[in-house]
Image (spheres, one colour):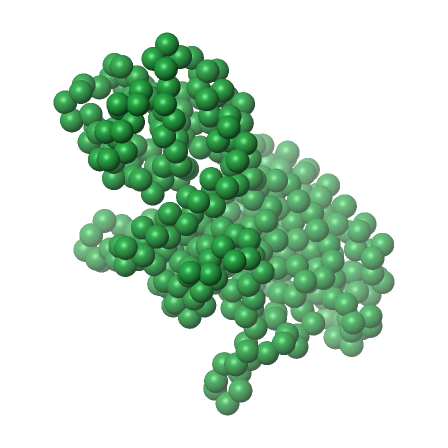
Length: 355
């Protein structure tokens, strides 16, 4: 094994291409049995090995296979995250614990980086539906086909918006999901004017008082769910705009980098084609074409920012080119500063390792 990892670099240069592997899969060891996760990982690694050996010579493929097998041994099943991801080249490997769901993914080839992990995010609708009824407030967690009731409360007309907002605020701290609000038009208008959670609300949908079943709510939601990517993008832009007003938004490469080092990242939005390679020239950074043959070692500042945000437990969203022109192609929302004497800051919710 040591001999494989220490092959001379010129052997890797053999074809001018550097193999890489990127894998992502659901994790949650507190829900899924360890044996089941291990079995799925071994099956995925076996597929990746087969692809590498078909695409590259043994001398190029074996160092990557060795690194991905080493990562398998280092996975902690006491890290209760939603997903994990593994990246490996002949020179380096990275293990990520992620707070968002992913679709199982295996990629082999060149130019694989941390953006491939973000692209593995599950794009299926996942949201909260707040239903304002005549005497009750019902809160559901939803997907494309059904709603699951997670909270049921009675409410009074007196001060009902503050009552709703308090409960919704606590739920949003736990779920971090976009919200649809359903109810009679009069209630929706009042809620829209007075809520403090407008940045999380995707749409207000009127409901006929005679429509009261969960199946009927899903039917009402369906047109919005059919345009989920558009709604998701609009919600992100709305969050950026609100953060700008609150002076918690940092735009451009330099601004996002500085903010990411503060370890208070909430949301990073970046155009999917954005890259910035750097090199050191007399202690000055300058843009240049990538010189390294290693995809994980090309000094792409954008990838470094993404990794910092993931490590700190923040969200990362990739948007189409041109979506963030007003924000210099990349923007990071930072949490308000919390004094050391105040409540404890939230713990780091993802982790990366370099090997």
